[in-house]
Length: 330
Image: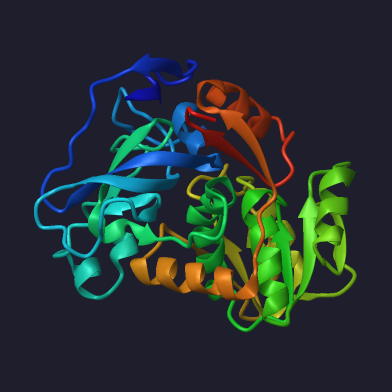
């Protein structure tokens, strides 16, 4: 197999030929068709997430076809298309797993962080965390659904029944979730970096009621706001934008420090809540909803060996929608 390998934090990934992996009990192997490039991958390669397994192959928005099954896997078959997300396995016995909160498992495995991921031609996955995918879409179009979509969906659930919804940071997740929110009858307000008129225009094309800078107040108060950008300064800005009783959802796995802010921004029963990982229920619900709602992803594709370029474009904000890697043959 071939893969893009991170050997040292802060250094470029290296394209290498590696021994073929083989699935163990309860596992499967996929021939990767496509792998999305997620901001969490940047947090891994830039050292913003602690203690990654090194060397590591990043990538956790994997679409592939099963080409090997380990012992005990009888609910999936060779040739089936599956999606492999960030949460790669859970212990099943800790208090969180026992209370149907497996996303908070005490001994989790994370794809592309603590086990090799999808910036490769092949990947190993726990069969319990491999989601069957539809056949009527291109693999590259499905890949962003596996994290940008899934975490976006969980964050949308945490926004409750908000009718006016703000999205801070209009990248891979927001361009999917604006479509989901509109299908649910919500009105969406998009916030971007100062001067990012391209992303604002993109949001408006997708149906946002308003788009502007994160430094601006929205034209009306919001019921809820979801922060996708990893910028702590957006928390007090979002609190100021939501009405009494509103909620601010922090959807990223990493965020810069949140600055101090006056208590009056939190008062009147406003809430701040974070979203962590996903559950299998999230995956099954969202993938079914995405099919029914006809959600479409905007993608830019790169050959697998150009993963460093994809990460650089994501870091610099040069992408509209999501980046996706395509292993050979392209």
